[in-house]
Amino acid sequence: MSDTSPARETGWPRAVLFDLLTALLDSWTVWNRAAGSETAGRTWRAEYLRRTYGCGAYVSYEQLVREAAAHVGLPSSAPLALEAEWLTLPAWDGVRELLQALRPHCKLGVVTNCSKTLGHQAAGLLGIDWDVVVTSEEAGFYKPDPRPYRLALDRLGVDASDAAFVAGSGYDLFGTSAVGLRTFWHNRVGLSRPDGAPAPDSEAPTLGPALDWLRHFHATA
Image (cartoon, rainbow, N blue to C red; front, side, top):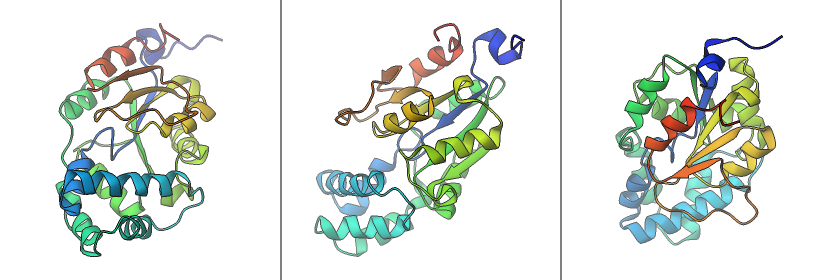
């Protein structure tokens, strides 16, 4: 039997899942401010990402942030400053417009490498009634392990083939490929694709092209 749902008739996916802290929110600025400079912030963030994406089973997000800071020579005040400024995380330009444009057509969800408390707080900053928010703490594993993505899809009742993912980090490409999620990479800060990572289905430094890609999601499958 053919699927005649509105999403398929119009080309939209039934659900769009988002990385939160890189694809939707400008966490880079807050990390840099907590570290004292852009150079120190990027070094700290790179070490944190290395630890997180290599972690697998969940270890306290806050612990990984502290360990990464210490490893790159930052004082203990840096992770404390990051947590203190958590609710000031700004959205990238175009984020709210994209979410509002998608809301009538697709279920919307977040899959984020974060603790449950901080992840839900950050998701709430965008003023969207999310259909699902999955943190690595709730899934028990950090991305790019497939389990966080699959948990979000299971909670939505949507197959991976009928969902899309908007990534902020190239590491997500390992996980979305394993699950079968077609992926738009919002590569805002011009990151290099990690060695061995599959290519995204589409990539841009802004979110404008994502709307057109999602509008024709099934037509370009």
